[in-house]
Length: 338
Image 1 (cartoon, rainbow, N blue to C red):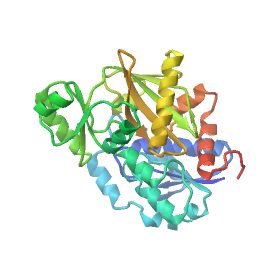
Image 2 (image 1 turned 180 degrees about the vertical axis):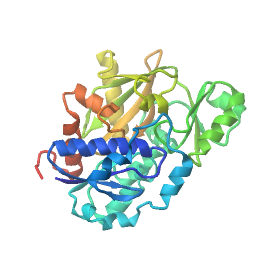
Image 3 (image 1 turned 135 degrees about the vertical axis):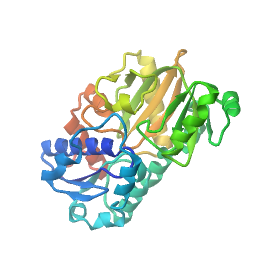
Image 4 (image 1 turned 90 degrees about the vertical axis):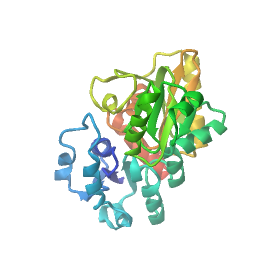
């Protein structure tokens, strides 16, 4: 296959996207595919310059907003279809996270050009990216989700409807960027201010005390459940991307009934939101074993040590084969060599 890995971009998850995109490119080359890399913020990246895209790896914090605003000036839009490597590609592998790369914007542009790409379509991407809308859809399909409110809110209203501790987070962000755990009403305003730096809509959600799980979906099947045990109380940006800051156990050390319940719920979420190809669905389980849907990730992290690759490895699938399978799902020809 001729594959273009589209990565980078200008969201707060730019570094994560670059880490995923560069590792996906290497993995597909291992499978002897012809791979080009395109940075959504800068255009075609010659192979000899790929390593310079992310020389220090993913840091403990997301890139500064000022730097991301500078990159916006070079953001590719309709010009994406004019890049020769893109025009020649069999499929675009979306190694993007957050922002326009995950909210349906890029997907809609590619649909207009008729270019096959990995992951969900533009409508499903937009639905899943909006935590408020996705929770409403999932709730209407009979799957529990923690109680939530959308800002503006007061501490009195939060205490009555959601309770403390609560999670305050941007409604359309990923990687826990701008997220806070608020234990007291007097800390609410500060958390709302932080979250509003990253999105114009902010969610306040009940914190479910318990265990955190995630389930990857590949095609029409659920991968083994992964349990996440962060060093912090929340699985925040630092815990996600700093080695040693979280245990990620694949398969999760849980009984078959709970594993089956989580996998079934993940498939139901995937279908309710009309996702396709692959996704990752996040849950928490309380002390009584009741599970709660948190969010759906249409373009989850894809470094070799990310959650879906770990789940795939637990199912006997290597990272290069996983990346190739995602491409073939996008083409609708899983077993065909191209």
